[in-house]
Image 1 (cartoon, protein in one colour):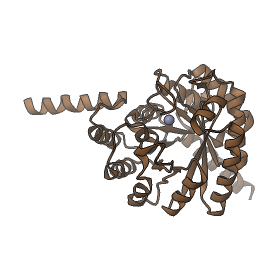
Image 2 (cartoon, protein in one colour):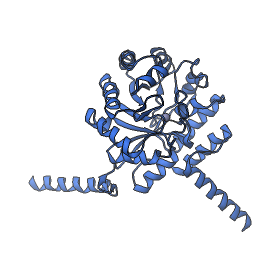
Image 3 (tube, rainbow, N blue to C red):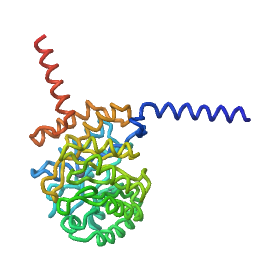
Image 4 (cartoon, protein in one colour):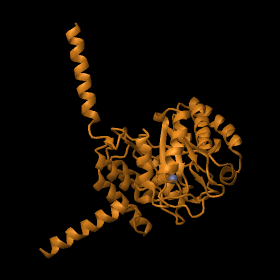
Length: 337
Ligand SMILES: [Zn+2]
């Protein structure tokens, strides 16, 4: 009996060690596996001035799923008056051939949005609050406290519909109107969303002003207020700090990262802010550590090239630029050979 127990313990320690190999980094234990939440079709495309055909959005989502992404934020049920680019949200959600292993959350900023999302068959929704009072008032026309009241109703209705709710905290590091945001203020809003029933709270550096120093301080405050397993990092690359900030979050135990294919996106309410950290860049970095992410980088670069072709612009992802240039070089070599 004792021998069997010892054998079991040994087996357990071997398999645990096997899965934990290669993720120690400069004294910090990085997660063995990271979940990437692809936000390009929503966060990215909502900031495009041009009208994008519904079939292009649906094709992008299919390609991202084909590349191995398991969570793809599909669209947002905001009022078409605010964001006309997302007026076809119900069509997008209904036209996706949903893969059983992929989740397709949608943003629902208010009750009306939630109702429209549920009617369109949403199985997971997301809400967003701001850590800065001015941003909250300018972005959603209500104070942080008022937004929490609104979310109480949304979370209750979502629970009744058996739909999971993800929370976003925007301006978690800095605010375009107020400047630096206190880590305690970001942690407080995150804790309130968690208490309302959000299974995960994604901390957004909406205007991309964060550095590893300020992002670390923010996550330090957050991990005191809610479990690290319930936290996600949503970093923007505006000042080129995106990947460094993602790595900082990983060093602090965060294992869910929001990214956007081709670095699409920004924030329509945050002047000068553009570019979520690119999915390609984060996938490349994770592969460098041997961290499991489940994404096929070649197929991801194809998806990136597809959407950039449709938008008639170059990718903002460094990794896609490098890989597309390498592909061109080898094609030219093959032709001249
Ligand atoms: Zn974003």
